[in-house]
Amino acid sequence: MKLGFIGTGVMGQSMVGHFLASGHHVNVYNRTKSKTDKLVAKGAVWCDTPELVAAESEVVFTMVGYPADVEEVYYGEKGIFQTDVAAKYLVDFTTSTPKLAEQIYQTAKEHGAASIDAPVSGGDLGAKNGTLTIMAGGDEEAYQKVEPLFEIVGKTCHLHGSAGKGQHTKMANQIMIAGTMTGMTEMLVYADKAGLELPQVIETLSGGSAANWSLANYSPRILKEDFSPGFFVKHFIKDLGIALDEAAKMGLDLPSTALAKKMYDRLAEAGYESDGTQALIKLWWQDGKKS
Ligand code: NAP
View 1 (cartoon, helix red, strand yellow):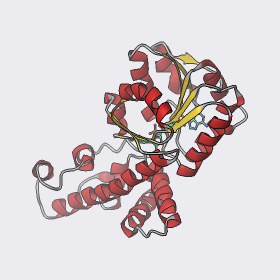
View 2 (cartoon, rainbow, N blue to C red; view 1 turned 45 degrees about the horizontal axis):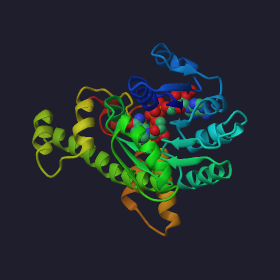
View 3 (spheres, rainbow, N blue to C red; view 1 turned 90 degrees about the horizontal axis):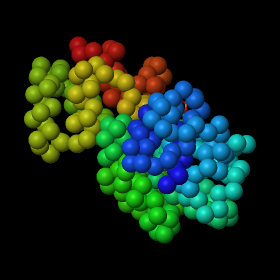
C-alpha cells in the first residue's frame, strides 16, 4: 500500500520503520529534513511538502508535535488539503485537541476523504517495539480500513466513537499518567531520603499494587540519570493543558491534574522542557543526581 507519513521525530521515526519493514511504500516529510535520512536509506521516499505526501499516498499519517503543527500540515499553504484527497484516509497520531480532530474530520468529509484521530500511548519504547496503544475516533468503516495498519505499530487498538473521541481517550490516559508520574517521583524522593536501596524498592513495589507503567519504564532511567526523551516535558505540558481545558468545558475540576501541570510548568521554567518526563525528579534532586 502507498502510505504517507509526516513527522519523523521520536515516535514517527520508529513507526515509519515498522511500516517499511512490513513491505509498505512510505512517502515521508518532516520539517527538519535530516530526520528522514535514515528512513530514506531504508527505502522511504522523501516528498518536499505535506501536500505532495498526500498526493502520492492512499493513507496519510501525521505525527507532529502540537495542535498548531497539525493545523499547519493539514491546512497550511503546502498542506494536505491543498491536494485532491478524495477517497484517501487521513490519520492523525499526534496528541492534539478533540476540536481540531472534529474540524479535520469535517473538512476531509467535504473533500470525499475519511479522517481518523488516533493518538497513541506506550512511549518511545512502544513505538520502537511496535506495541503502541492506539485510541481512535471517527467512522467505523474508515477505522476498519486502517486498523490492519495500526496493528503494524500497535498492540491494543480501539475505536472510541466519533471524531475527537480518540483525543478524549488520550486525555483520559494523560490524566492517569499525571498521577503515576508524580507518584513515582515522590516515591523515589521519599525512599531515598529514608535511606532505602532504590533498585530493591522498585523491584518490591513492582510486584505489588503500586505497580504501573511509569514505575516500570521511567524509574530505571532515573537511576541511570538518563533524562533523554522518551516523552518530552513540553509535550506533557501541552497534553495536560488540553486535558484541563476540556475538563473545564465539561464543568469538571481536576485538582491533581492541575497540580501535576504546575509541577511540570516549574520544571520547564527551570530549563528542562526538552528533557523526558522522568526529569520531574529534578525538582528535588539537583540535575537528577541522588543526594
Ligand atoms: P518529536 O520528536 O518532536 O516529533 C515531532 C516531529 O514532527 C518532529 O520531527 C518535527 O520536526 C515534526 N513537525 C512538527 N511540526 C511540523 C510541521 N509543521 N511540518 C512537518 N513536520 C513537523 O515528538 P514525538 O515525541 O515524536 O511526539 C509526537 C507526538 O506524539 C506529540 O504530539 C506527542 O505529544 C505525542 N506522543 C509522544 C509520545 C512519546 O513518548 N514520545 C507518546 C505518546 C504520544 P522538527 O524535527 O523540525 O522539530
